[in-house]
Amino acid sequence: MDWYLKVLKDYFKFSGRARRKEYWMFLLFHYLFLGLLLFLFIYSNDSLSIIDEQYSDKETNFIFLQILVVYAIATFIPSLAVSSRRMHDLGKSGAWFFINLIPYIGGFWFLILTCMEGENKVNKYGENPKGINNNREIDFIGRE
Image 1 (cartoon, rainbow, N blue to C red):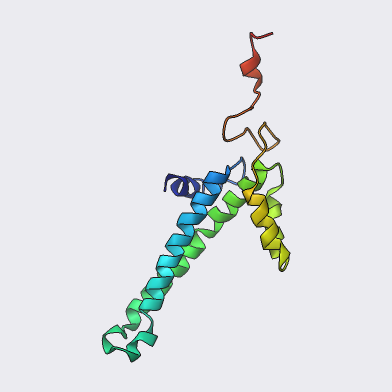
Image 2: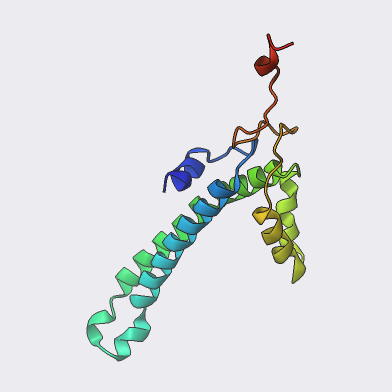
């Protein structure tokens, strides 16, 4: 849950790098929340009024729909940002996210990219988020 909240705190942060754990934990909780809201919306839907008249509350259905839409819109930018940072960890531009738009193969290709281990060194997008092999100059002072 901490990783999910970290991504939400970095709402508009498209720079830097995101490790696999940050990306996948965000997606896990994101889809859990979306699924829960979708379940509540479907459960409150009028189709259940056929079974029992007590479920035909249109106001509740509309409220769940509004919450679902607001949540989806509010988390759109953070999901783009964490995807961009995930691509940065691989040494690729954040624009690689748009590979998802290629029919059939694009989503699968992006899935493979997000599963790959990031570069174990400093790249042009920042230091390794794991802290391994960062090779900062300050670490080598006095070791000459």
